Image (cartoon, rainbow, N blue to C red; front, side, top):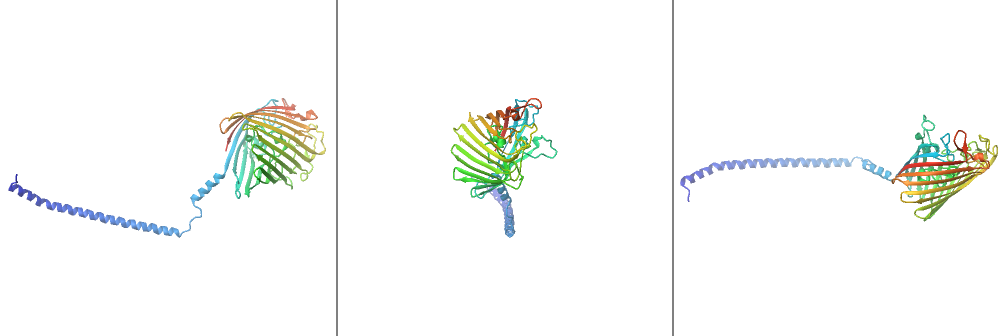
Length: 452
């Protein structure tokens, strides 16, 4: 079918009318496109200007002085320092009951170094130990070992000015404080450090027994201040030698120095050490405080101490200690009871003794330990006034590792003294005022948290 003449004319007229409209739309689109192109060009110009400014500032910074160490480098150096510092310590508390039931409970256990108070809960020690070991040749280091509590008081710690005499929880004592340098495998310590002598140590958590023995308390010094060098001779032998102020004193009491020495050997399950101290410091005995030496500069003390340890099996360990010591030119003064046979005389005092200890690991957490000691004080200089004073101790300890860091121990300790004159060996308080005994039985519970 074909369109009529009128219809064809109408379509032609419509197309003629629509063409101007299409033309105007194309013109508007072209205008918008041109505006967008102009905007893009302006943005590109600004970006190029900004990049040029950044490059100019970078060149300017290159001409300025920069710090030698940046913040990142400071943090890195601090991290390296802290990574080399070993942090360890412990908190120890105990309860002690003395079967003698002494009237005065303070400092009633005459043969103990610590754990002195009867029927008392004690803060034995809170200890912080910081050490950067100089383990490699050319390295420097330090050791800071601080005690708080009753043990610090007994070791001669310092009170705040207004503290009461027995405010043990306010006492601070620096057990060790020294700087170290490793020179070609020889370690030098300069400052205060623990003695080389003896099997037991001041830190009670490092010993199998809660209480230290008689040899620790009476036969050897505990610490020194001076210069100590130690090293290895081959794989199995080692040595140590030092010059110190004296016996248990941070400051020198005279113009002379004491000397320390040790030779040690270890192989497999066996280790041993022979140590000695020699010096002139007026090494006055613990209980015979009235006794003095004739001359602090010339009256010398000599102590020789031998220890050995054998790990017989993975579970069973045994150790020994033998000790001999002397102090020249002791002036014996009459004690309060007037009982010393040496009063008013100047003599050389000697002491000697031995120890044997064992430990058995029952399980991963449970262990048993026992210690037996014998000690002879031939003129009553170290323990009690009298002739041939002899001490005997027997200690049994049950230990349990409650958690990896929490240690619990129960201990029973028996002490006995004898002398040619029996009354002169009765130094253990008993019962009412003035009563004494030559026997002592103690029950001790100890709990310690140890961290490293």
